[in-house]
Amino acid sequence: MRARNITSFSGELCKISGDIDIFSGLLFSAYIFANGSLPAGLSRIVFSLLLAIAGAPLMALGIIATNSKRQIALIALQTWTNAPFD
Image (cartoon, rainbow, N blue to C red; front, top):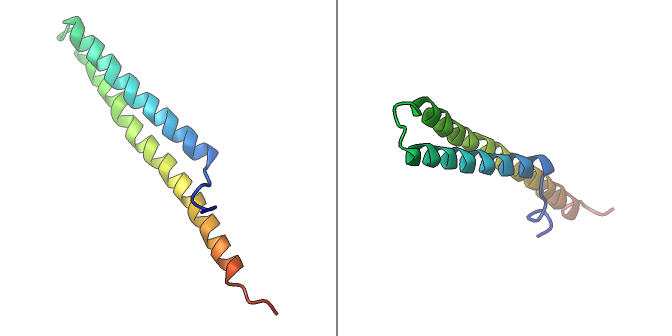
């Protein structure tokens, strides 16, 4: 239970910034598309969608960092509880 609740600060920061990238990219794309200037704003739409897509690997990196820290804590707990007492 203790290993499951461990979090990584850098992992959480990556997940939050990935969420912000995805949300802002989709929000900018929707705003530009709703503005009606599709030919003029095509490069902006592409940039906004790329910003949204770039958030996914950043979130994945944060999840990997958090899970790695949890796995290390679980291995340490298992090693400590299975250690023979002489």
